[in-house]
Image 1 (cartoon, helix red, strand yellow):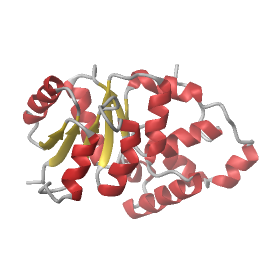
Image 2 (cartoon, helix red, strand yellow; image 1 turned 180 degrees about the vertical axis):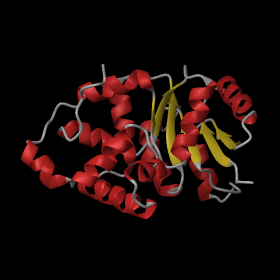
Image 3 (cartoon, one colour; image 1 turned 90 degrees about the vertical axis):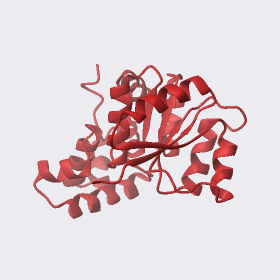
Length: 223
């Protein structure tokens, strides 16, 4: 049996934490291993070695007492580098979404998401994909105005890297990309690493956002 996805939640409202705990408790492949009301308390638990094991996923609210979620993202990335961060918040402000992605969050979901949307998002992110609330995708992309000339786009990424990036933007995980392009998983991993390096992006959501910003990926089809 595969190991369960370990999840840590940083959320200051006990009632909402209880709702999520009940929802995740029904999923056979997930385990809510810890929950905290503040960023500081969550970070201290790892610095003081109180936490028994590191999470695979961090569900992070933005509006927290003390250090807010956006400020917290780089700290979690440093303290728990193998954990992937999903912002789970009420904020649908375009600026918050874009900042969270650029800071390294692997997903951005609203608290109005259904249990299915939340659990599917967790699974996608745990497998190396990206999860962005569908209501917010258009907002994010329409904010990204800067464009690169076509000849610079061609020089920045190879044709194969563009194909891989386009599939990442469609929400495909690396194994699905390998199957669709009929190349090895190792080759996909190599292409993804080159894409991140060339776009100066820490993960898939940031690379995708940067690609739309530069005009590497088209905004058409988002309406």
